[in-house]
Structures are given as structure tokens and as C-alpha cells.
View 1 (cartoon, rainbow, N blue to C red):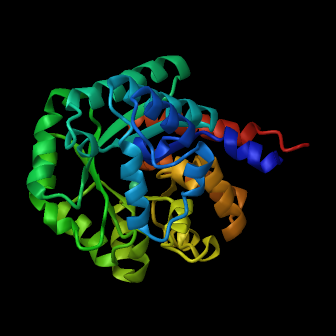
View 2: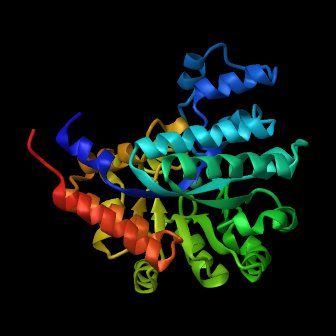
Length: 341
Ligand SMILES: [Zn+2]
């Protein structure tokens, strides 16, 4: 490993855009399928990994939802969450705010308690074992109705004290933020922070809707904002964070190559932009891999990588004290890192 790669892996990082279901590596997926006697369409781990070639967000979602089928019991949700947190910890992530989308499971008979108790049990164990700080974001699916999303909000109320925020992902085009105005109003009224995927495959207008109509605290992806200079100013002025996932954008053909990814331009425009892995098992890249890939493709400086990592803590839903402590840990590391070979 190069000194730079070592530096990036050891750098304290916050990951703010991570779907637990998208962290399910093929090996564990096969184990869970076998444990639950669930027949898979792939003959081997290698065959499944080879199927991870996507032409669009929709082609990815089809495989992602198929992968969700193997998750049945509380132990399955526990194992998936534990495996991700262990990897994130080894990758230098000290704060992670993870999405879980219960509707993939509850609509086929898995109870909401199975999902929530499994995920939360693993979070509690990893917090104790690895010292990693974890926040849980319940994510609704935007291809479903607003009534479905409101129903989900009701279902998770018993776990309110364990939920950091409410988010939304899934098929973006044709499902604009405005479809969920009442859902976001209700989520905020219930005391939750809010995020929404917008401006990934959808247009800048969706990002504007998310900010002006829904009033979300954070935008997931949001890269299409660069098509609207006024919107960029608005996002920069208000300091609204954007959780960008460069390798995901590449793998889902949202950008033609990483060399033309807008990340560097977003930084230059003064946006509070962060780098995240989205669905690392499917895209083959965890947090550090994303930073290193961007560094090479966009010719980012070491200082840019430090700024992106600092942005992660500034964009996280942390208390003032926890934010300051995380930034100090990061700055101390940067100051004392030994660059000699
Ligand atoms: Zn996402």
C-alpha cells in the first residue's frame, strides 16, 4: 500500500450515505440464502459478483432488491449490519449514519421488529466493541406512495429514540420530492432530521424542490445541482450538505468517467460536499477507495482529501461537542502522520 493509501485509510472519516442492504457482500448473501434455504439465481459467489455490471440506477435496483430477499430473520439483519460496521471501522470510519429501508422486507411479511431489532442490536454491539459512532436513518422508497411512506413512519415510532433521521431513496426519475411533501412535514413534526436522494439521475429541479419545498437538512447525491448556478449559490449559502458517492455514480453510468465527475467543481463552488460509498458491496468500493479513486481521477491534493473528510464531520448529525472531538482527532492525525517510507 502506498503512503498516501495508508494515510487515507487511517484518516478519521464520517460516512453519511450508506445503505446497509448495499453493504451485503456476495459471500454473506450466499451464507444467508443457505441458512434460510432460499434458492438463488446464481450458481456461485463469483457468478453473483460478475452480475454486478449496471447500465443505470434501475438495473442496479433490480439486483439490489433481489439481494434483499435473503434477509429474513433478526440474526440476518444483525449479521449484515455487523459485517459493514466491522469493515467501516477497519477503513478508518469513526462516524457512520446508515440507511435501512424496511419496506423491502415488511411488504413480504418480515416484521418491522425483526428489521429494527437486528440492525440496532448490531449497532449497539459495534459501538461497544469498536468504539464506532453510528446513527440510523430509516429510508422510505420513492416508487411507492406517500401513504406507504406515512405508514412506515407510524410503524417505526416504537424505535423513535433510536432513529436519527428519515430519508428516501429508490427510483428517482418520475418520483419527485414534491410527491412526499406531507411525509416530510410529518417526519419533521415527529422530531426527525431529514435527508432525501435527489439530483442523482434526476434533474437540478428535484434538488431545488428538496430544499425549498421539503426543507431537508441534507441532500444525498445532489450532483445535478451543478446545472443550476443559482441553486449552487443557495446550497453554499445555507451550508446544506451533499453526500456524494463518486464510484456509485460511475458504476451506475450517472457520469461517463470519474475524470468528468463534478466533485472537484463542487468543492471549488464552496459546497459542503462529502464522499461516501452508497452500496459498497455492489460497487466494489468502500469509503477510502472512493477518496483514493477521486484523488487519482480528479487530481485532488492531499489537502482536498482532508477537507472532504472534515466536511464529513461538519455535515454529520452530531452534537457540537462530538463534532469538535472528531475534528480534533482528524487534525491531530494529519499533523502527526509520518510521510517517510
Ligand atoms: Zn444512496
